[in-house]
Length: 221
Ligand code: DC
Image 1 (cartoon, rainbow, N blue to C red):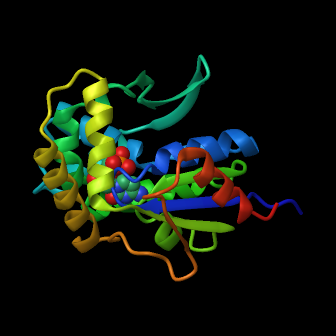
Image 2 (spheres, rainbow, N blue to C red):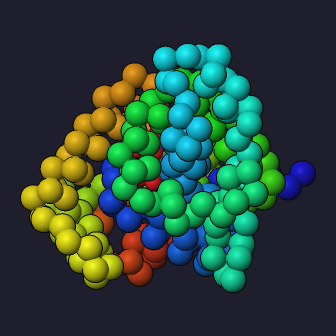
């Protein structure tokens, strides 16, 4: 019986999880799934439809009306929300500001985990997020836990935003990362923690091709 191979990549914000996950998926010809994009798309739906977070029934109904899918368009993987490509909009600030709040709701997590586990049945995958090796795929074939020096992460994020033409302050970026790390690691539902059997990848002093080599060195096909 052939088994689907699952690579789970978890870690702090702006550690380069998606860069590594995409490179790994490309190299191995696996499907890449960005679980953060799913929480962002749910957040966008909640914002557009003014979902009242105090009403569990309304949240339940909203979740039933959300259909997420990943599709490949012009060599790029995009996420669709009820058929609409929302890949760009989910990266905008109005979504980023609310995603921590929405992703901490238990009903939201239960539904996303269900969908992520279903996706894991459809082929070999690389999935990145915060709870992939602990909750979504506790039996993943390879678990990586990514970390990097906070100052280096902030500098990378700063350079990325500046190169996109945004006006940002280094101090602001540093504080925002520290806040998100704190929120992700201390929330009640599925906080970010390293799975016991995860391999730590600290990429403070290594580049993208070195981290890819590191990950490939741990994969047993
Ligand atoms: O990876 P990202 O920054 O795009 O994730 C967006 C948000 O979603 C982030 O605040 C943490 C949350 N998230 C989560 O709670 N669980 C996941 N598996 C992935 C992301």
